[in-house]
Length: 86
Image (cartoon, rainbow, N blue to C red; front, side, top):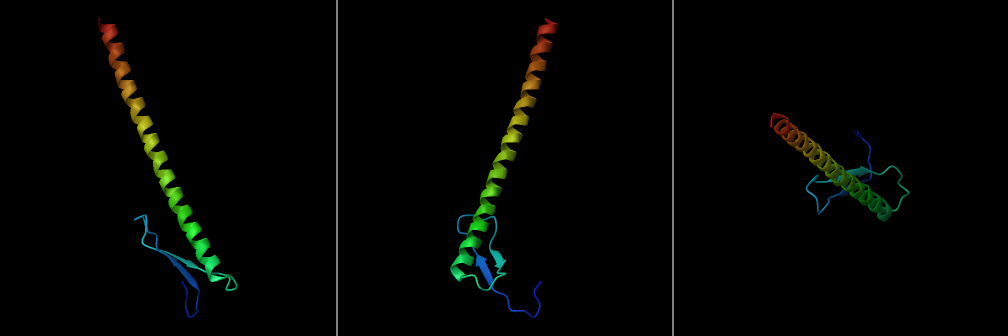
């Protein structure tokens, strides 16, 4: 929380993703040129988005793998029961 202090901020509004509306970065060093601060803020925001989509894909793959194992276990049990009962 900033009280009674003037701070320099960079606001990034992404175009391609509806995950968040805007990201606000507080600039620590006033000697950094504005273009460098904006470039760094965009790089951080894009890195966050890339990390989120990659994580989501891994969860989906793990879920699908678990479902495949469950289906395989049920089918193998059914085949085993059919062989034993015949």
